[in-house]
Amino acid sequence: MQYSTKKRTLFKTISWRTIATLTTAVLVYIFTGEIAIAITIGGIEVIAKMIFYFAHERVWAKIKYGKKEIPSFVVWITGLPSSGKREIADGLYKRLLERKLKVGRIDSRGVRPLFPETGFAPGDVDQHVRRAGHLCSMLEKNGVIVVASFVSPYKESRSFARKQANHFVEVYLNTTAEACEKRDDRGRYGRAKKGEYRFFPGVNIEYEIPNSPEIIIDVDSISIDEATSQIESYLQRTLINHH
Image (cartoon, rainbow, N blue to C red):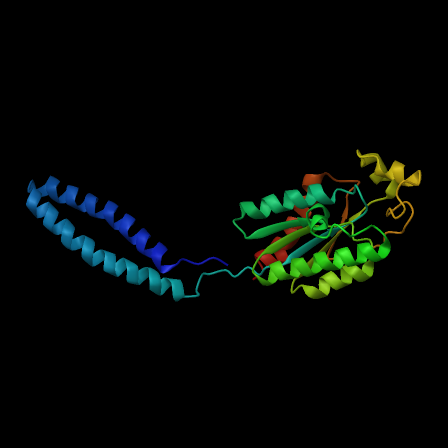
């Protein structure tokens, strides 16, 4: 949440009163034709009204009426490789930024370099997702809205990430391995089928479908932009405008 400091209020006071005083002095001169009178009235006005304006701003800063509190939260987008997680998450991140919200973006590409020893075996992936979940919760507790995108194929580690957060929105991208393979411009599915990858969700290990995610998106039937809008609408109803 953002608030106005006393220093910011002071600078606003000075800039506003400078403009207003010049306006007053010009008007007085136009009507009286006396420069001395215009300067005197302008000087008296600027001192008096700066004091009143500063006090007025500080009083209103403490009044809760009309203020909207938006809680921080974690949006966790999960699904098979090449289901569109990163594209949707990037789009949502940009939209939340446009709302002037304090938001952060996390995905596997950003987290894995922090732990270069992490592999892709089930145990490694589970630990990786837990670390990411903990990182998301720390950001959330510091007032940051987090948009996270991870394959996160195991229910247990996703459950761990949920428990760490105060407000957790799980978004499941519903699709098939066949459809994802067609979208896979990096050829990972083909390599997994050839045995180059041992633990690839949708090919040689199972992706565990979430039991009760907050949002399910059928990505094979809608565009990335439409999918992003679905998430944004849900957040607007339940978190952004609800509080």
